[in-house]
Amino acid sequence: MNSRHMKTFDAIIIGSGQAGTPLVFKLAAQGQKVAFIEKEHFGGTCLNVGCTPTKAYVASARRMWDAQHGEALGIEIPKGAKTNLQKIKARKDALIKKSVDGIAQGVEKNENITYFKGEARFEGKKIVEVNNEKLTADEIYINVGGRPFVPEGYEDIPYLTNQSILELEALPEHLLIVGGSYIGLEFGQMFARFGSKVTIIERGSAIIGREDEETSRTIQEFMEADGVDFRLEANCISAKKNQDGSISAQINCSKEGSVEIQGSHLLLAVGRRPNTDGLQLEKTGVETNDKGFVMVDDHLETNIKGIYALGDCNGKGAFTHTAYNDYEIIADNKFEGKDRKASDRILTYGLFVDPPMGRVGITKKEAEKKGLEVRIGHRPFSRISRAKEKGETHGYMSVVVDAKTKKILGATVLGVGGDEIISGLINIMYADASYEVIRDSVQPHPTVSELIPTMLESLT
Image 1 (tube, one colour):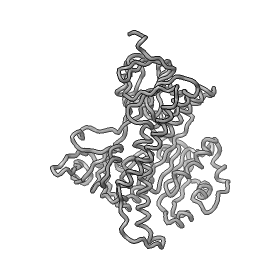
Image 2 (cartoon, rainbow, N blue to C red):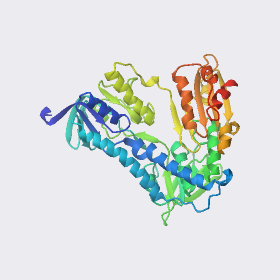
Image 3 (cartoon, rainbow, N blue to C red):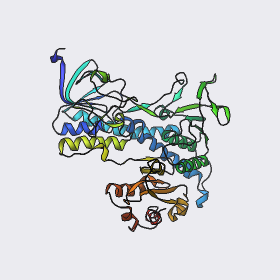
């Protein structure tokens, strides 16, 4: 191959998610010539079809809930509140557009960034092809993200994913959701509040199997109060399209025997897989695991020196905050002389049902599996003054403490404000301090957070 026809850069970044985008601007600011490749839209999953749109929808669903629950707090709201999905979608689209346009303008104005809209494929160890052009660089960063997993047998069914459901402009009459984990639960509750009939079908004996049973049970209870119907232990799930355009889901080996449920729409929410299969990684020698995740070391480098994988496609976290931390690791190690590692971070995430859950570290279930000697703190929200005053007493908080070191190993705050309150516990864990620091602290009253010291006073 004639090297004259190849464009040479200091770095190539494939994908514009929450790691790739800030890294492009960082490298360009340091005077590097960067090729930036994106096949779909700037901002990746989080901005376009993940956190930003879904949390906008969650906020609208909450307004609907408020409109229907005035009575309990002495507010008489006349009946008649209704969902305008077109307006909800338009608000969401405008939010996204503002951010996407911001990235596009930044890229356009930056003379050190060359943007290629297209799909990248490797043609050699450090050679990337996009739109029939060949590019090369000493450093290549893969930030290609993931996509919804579609199991076999659904190819001919008009199914929705977390992406296409956000394009609907009319409310589903009856939304069937296959998968009772984070994505399925968030969409299930929000569409139930919007006014759709919702059925969640889950293979496991409980929703979100990776959480403690109490978490699953609590969430199921308050979502059932919102009208969501759950079908658990549903194996051999299949679906068919009916002549009138509706969809039937068959559950052939549930505890109720064979069941058929009719719905107008079907959302598949059974997990995600990395977008690495189109990259032709075999031409670089970059190793992936059996699920397609790119194997990286603690500094996010693959087995090929100079090729890195960031964000969801490296399997080291599946969150916006872990992807952004991947960017920080690369930037700080490269330009600030630091030695940051992916293993330094503590697992944390939220589940944005209402009330939301904040989670950090390991669960009680995981601690027991590891045979750790732990002490547990637990408090139901029904005993928190502020939760009672707000009329939102669903949920609980719990903490797992190492009996020997007195360090917090994990915590769950499932209840009003839980997604924000968890940060207090995260901070103690990063400070590597004893749980006694927060136990002996004085928190403002009346807040939900003040129950954390109380909970820590009586570990069992």
